[in-house]
Structures are given as C-alpha cells and as structure tokens.
Amino acid sequence: MANDNEWWKKSVVYQIYPMSFQDSNNDGIGDLNGITSRLEYVQKLGADVIWLNPIYKSPNRDNGYDISDYLAIQPEYGTMVDFDKLLEKAHALGLKIMMDLVVNHTSDLHKWFEESRKSKDNPYRDYYIWRDPVDGHAPNNWGSRFDGSAWEFDEQTGQYYLHLYAKEQPDLNWENPKVREEVWNLMRFWLDKGIDGFRMDVINLISKPVGLPDGPVKPGAKFGGTGAVANGHRLAEFLDEMHEKVLSKYDVMTVGEMPGSSPKNAIDYAGLKANKLNMVFQFTHVNVSPNKDKRLGHWNDEAINLVDLKKALSKWEIALDGKGWNSLYWSNHDQARAVSRFATDDPKYRVKAAKMLATTLHMLQGTPYVYEGEEIGMTNAHFTKLLQYEDVQSLNAYQEYVDIEKIVDQETMLKYLANRSRDNARTPMQWDSTVNSGFAKTTPWFTVNDNYPEINVKRNLADPDSVFYYYQKLIELRHNCDLVVYGDYAVLDLEDEEVFTYRRRYNDETLLVINNFTAQDVIRDYGQESGALLISNYDDDKHTRLRAYESKVYLLK
Ligand code: NOJ
Image (cartoon, rainbow, N blue to C red):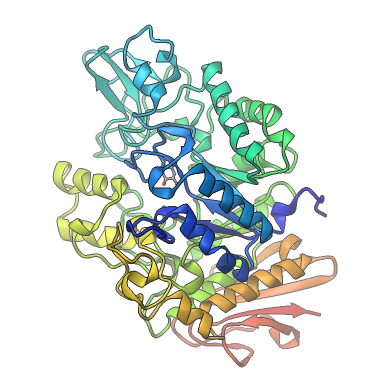
C-alpha cells in the first residue's frame, strides 16, 4: 500500500513542449503565458502533474537541452514573473509542475564553459572534461549520441572537451564537488519557488568511467559506443548526495531519464527503498524493432513487432512490482507520434487505434505520461524532404549516414526520418481548424501538421466519442481504482502476434485488459464472458470477437 507522500504513484503526467504548445504574443513560438492560458484544458483532461520541457535560457542548439543560464527564463518564453503566474495558477487548479533538470551538460555559451575554455588554469576549467590529444587524435574513440566524435578540439588551449551530445553541449565534470554544489543550488532555487519535481535529463550519464576507456566498435562503424558511460561507478553516490542535500527536504516527484538501463539499474537508482529517485524513464519498449543494420540504430521504417513490444513492457512490469515504480509512456518530444509508430494513423482506424494504445498503457502499473497532442490522436508529420526537418539529431544522422558514411541512400533515410524523427512530435499543438491550428496567429517556428483541420482539440471536445474523452475516462478510472494503480501484472499469451492481453490483480479483484493491435477481426477467449466491462473503444461488446484495434477492460468476479 502506498504512503501518503507517494502521491506520484496515483498521478498522471501531461508533458508540455513549450515551444510548440501555445503562442500568446504572436511571434510564432509557444510561451509561458500561452501555457497558462491552457491550464484549464489540462485540468479538464484530469492530469495531475505537468512536465515542462526546458524553459531556461538557451541558444536552442538542441531546443532547450543546451542551457546557458539555469536561473533565467528563455526570453521567447517570457519572464520569471510569467513563470510565477503559471505556477500559481497551476497550483490553484490543483495541478503540479515538474521541471526538466538538464545537468549532464550545459550549453557552450554557459558562462561556466565560456570561462572554462579560456585557459587551463581558469577556476572553471575543471567544471568540464578536458583532455590532451593522444597521438594527435581525440583522447578516446567515443562517438557522440548525435553522431560524429564525442570530442571537440579547442584551439585556444590545445585540448579536447567531451560532449556526449552536440558539440555545443559540453559535459559537466561531476567528479568536481564544486559542480555538484552548483547543481544542488540551482535545484534549490526552483524547489524554493514551489515546483513539484524534476524530470532529470540523461541523469545516468553523469558518472564517467575511470580513465575514459575506448568503447566497443560495431562492425563498419567509425566510433566506439558510450554504453559504458551509463550507470557509472559513482552514479549511486551522486544521487545519494542529491537526495541528502536537496530532495529529502522537499515533497517532490522525480523521474530520471536513463537510457541503456535494465530493471536492476532502475531498482538500484529508483527502487522503493533506494532513497534516490522515484522512477526512471527506460527505453526498452520504444527501442523495439531497431534497424537490422546495427550501425543505423533506431533509424528504420519497419512496423513494430508486437511480441517484442509485449516482452519489453512485461519485463519491466514484472521486475519492478513491489520493488520500484514504472513510468509509462508511448511518446514524448524524442519519439515519433505513438499512433503512427505503434498502431496506425490511417484515417479509417486512427481514433480506435489511439484509444487502443491508450488503454494498453494506462491500465499498466506505473505513472502514465501523456505527451501533448497524444490525447487527441495527433500523428506523425509525414515529411518527405530534408528541408522540412529542424532537429539536430535528425539532421546529423542524415549527414552521417547518407553524406559521410554512405550507408543508406537519401530516399531510404528520408523514410527512416519520416518514421522515427523527433520532429514528428514537435509540430505545433493542434487546437482548432483556424489558421496555424490556433497555435499562433503568425507563421509558427515549425510546420503545423496538414491534418489539423481534422485532428484538433476543438473537434475532440465537441465529440463525446473522441480520443480526448477516452483519455479522460482512463485517467478517471486510475484515480478511482486502486486495482489499476497497485495491482500486479501478468501477460497472457505472450507469443500472440496480434493481441496484447494482460491481467492485473489486487486483493480479491482482477482486471482483464484486451487489446487488438491489428485491423482484422480476431477471436480470443480469456474468460471475459463472466466479467463486467469497465471501458472499451467500441459501443457494444462482441465478447470473444475482437474488431479492428478493439480494446476492452473487464473486472472479473
Ligand atoms: C534527452 C532529451 O530528452 C533530448 O531531447 C535531448 O536531446 C538529450 N537528452 C540531450 O539533452
């Protein structure tokens, strides 16, 4: 049973990508006042917590994940006064605010880095990771997660600095206690304002391995992997220090983004008894069906394999039950749109498919995250030209694999981008069918998806059978049913390639959750005949017959 201070276990989080949510001052860029004006909408959905992607001052090389001042608001987004108003109104509406904490790296325009690069004896030199060249080359073979080398040579002092992401995102040196103090201080600044938690960007990369050894090189690849950086030897210690010095003093929610983590890592760093973080974002389920050519990683245009997806989700549900807590998500600002990737955005089935995915996720054990627009069934952008993309990861990948390494041709890479690019998630929120989807009165910073006259909030709110109201109902179910929150999990027919069925059990009650992931009618009998139907995306129940993308949740006696 949960303690009272574990409110995050019963919560549903709504993620807002500020740049694309709502413009209020006609510059085509979403902003804080725009978010404030839409808080009632989030409240209507029933979410409890809002996660805001970074709103700090940033040159936007990586859309806010390159921060140049942690204590200032990005001018395009507004002012600190606007932020205070947003927080106050959110709290008045019963909504909590979780901020993004990006402290594995800063922007190269942060004053710490500007100082650091000036000279080897600058007091800030050791805030970052500098190394001498080895035989005239980078100090090791690591590749950046945004392609190319993870090291950048700086003429001024003749050394390389480490950047696991873009070269404008130098990694902080967490071995330096002064760096950690800076981080604790900036966390306190926001917590003392009254924010309710942090989503911690790639927090499991902060402790680098001793001696920075070369990483394994995949056949044909140019650089070594940085897998060994994840969950480094001092991570537990750094998180303990963060907990002791900061988090333990506040009743807040924390979720650590942890690429490359196993359930064991999650239990170590965010287990119920770990006294560190509350939960982690893991990647197993969003990384299913990678490209068969390993050099291309997640870039592909293949349909997902349902059995692999079930295995991925089941592994986490089972391993964390009673030991940790899952964060449940299909989409976020780094993933393609869920309905397009995991089901279908064919207009014939889109609404049913979006509801089916929602059911699959929201009936699991963990805290569900809804990414802006997911609740109205927004789809991928289906861009066909490179010019349409904006995201640094997508553009770098194209350059690396098409232009430099020549592993794929242009046409194929464009298909991969259309399927997997983060830009699919970053098109402006579709509020209504007026110009620019009601997002902005002037040309938006990024293309609005063409389908906005059809898929938008206004239409969803006017239709009792919409994706929005279905999400609202699922959230309500969670809020009113301990079985949904705390029940244990078992998957049925794991090898079934068409249907994802699981049951949850709590005290004497059992929930049966059935999801048809295909456009075909199929027959399945799990004994649902005897159950009471709690929610479904069809109006009537055909019992053992499952129609296209049908979802049904039963309470079994
Ligand atoms: C994960 C963030 O979600 C992503 O958007 C960003 O590019 C990287 N971390 C680097 O900060």
